[in-house]
Image (cartoon, rainbow, N blue to C red; front, top):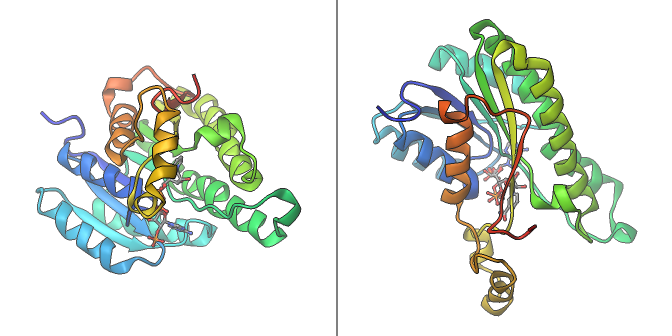
Length: 248
Ligand code: NAP
């Protein structure tokens, strides 16, 4: 029996990077996967096909995680298409880095809305379904930057630290209904995006990490698998750093 056999998961922002890695690992473990994207339609449809080939139900939805109404509409559509929701992964996120002196109000607001308000939108939207089922696992993709802070990322760090406070509060509010809520704080994860960076710079980052390598989307996906499955049935309100020891 696979760890997520027959469970229905929603993953936001799975058209590339970490979200795609989570969608693959979840489908390999038997989960039906509903996932969103913002503008990358072609890779999203390709992923939908790839996941369906693994024998699970999979569907891509174009949906703006920052919009309260869009989150409500998305969850209604997923319930109609899949019949239930057991797992929510709030993974969609952006960066708009700058020193505070140069950071515009618009860049602060958009990062907070897409990274943090989206978590409120989606959690509100799935809450009633999970309360009725008396079970559910919500996983929020924070960052080591939310735990530690980072110069040049005040907006991003605030959004990711906010997710941690939200995670712990939801764990306290919904624990009595068997709904768990945990956060993952990835360190430096190598994706298509980091592959375009200067190799010497990236190598310098790797050397600063105790495990001497960047993480992969699969490393994050495996932590999600733990939180989504019954292996973590007695774990809620936690933040797991998946960072090769970076913050240790
Ligand atoms: P990524 O490659 O940039 O992918 C971001 C995903 O989010 C894409 O699927 C994108 O869709 C989607 N997205 C962006 N804005 C959205 C919106 N308004 N509504 C719905 N979806 C939206 O990012 P990543 O590196 O995989 O990171 C995933 C998550 O992990 C983020 O929350 C990030 O902050 C966090 N994280 C990443 C790292 C790292 O090293 N990579 C480290 C710590 C934390 P489109 O493709 O359509 O634009």
